[in-house]
Length: 436
Ligand SMILES: [Zn+2]
Image 1 (cartoon, rainbow, N blue to C red):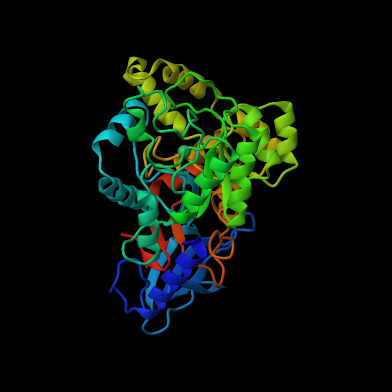
Image 2: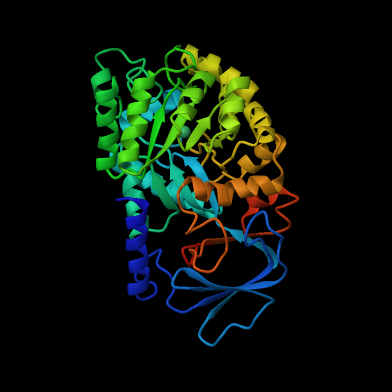
């Protein structure tokens, strides 16, 4: 089921059911929000005291001044706060909290059902942190896809989820869950159908994700920090394989996100016109120039550095040797690509890779974005307008405008001069429901 269908079902449920019957459906009576300051459209002038009316999960009016609520409406008083569109994280892994050796053990001992419940818990942490929409960039079990549907149907509360299903990789590539294991164990970890070799097999891998309900296709074109082999961080896929993945995804109208570290892999992804490149830690002049002339978003995922610093403190003897080496390097290089790509004019979409670091602390990415060359305002645009565009949801989310989903958050202070205010989220409304 694509995001469109999910949205139609969710809207239908919200309209057709009485208040409170299902978690996640909107209240039947209108809600009136008094905002002290309003960032309705990030990048435009901040508005003063304003009144937002929400009905059946939709924004139905936005007017200046604190207007009285009509009889029967619920008044939500945020007159001492700054009100903003719900935030969007374009790169999370809701089902898991661990990587490296700990992640490997978790995959051995946890059931798929456990991963689904864990994705729910992490989804709620993310939602309470003000992130009303996320793009899930892959799990090993398909559990986040189940959560995505349950949220869209109003069965459970959670952020709206655009889900990639299982991330595609070549055998021995970064998303091969069996990489580095002894041959006896490999079949047990390689049963998820997400690895492919050669163009025909890569077309099959995409179709399998589409058939499972993936909204977006994610694949690894280069090596990664947490894969257990020392095969480097450059391209690990042939162009005909990468092309087969992108072209097959397009047949089904799916957007494509690419995991890349090496500049060679990122250049291949740009040539194929993918929608976003994740991480992109290694730059070259050619890459910066080519990227600046493309429509492809950069999703920086800087927050993962918190995990790597923690793992160094815990002792790298707990890591596979090749991973230990890459962790040290990753700490050093964090943010350098953003420092190159922002002045070049590359489009940036906010994304944290939460799951590598703690869910619910997504707002720490704002600090790292500002430390590495963005303004608080451009970081907010990355987490609203730009991420909404990347997810194909510009008509639905990213601004507080009439007709859009009532995804609304509030903070103390001024987010356009102090990006730390997001860490103390004061109010969250998702699709018209106030999140407790
Ligand atoms: Zn990731």
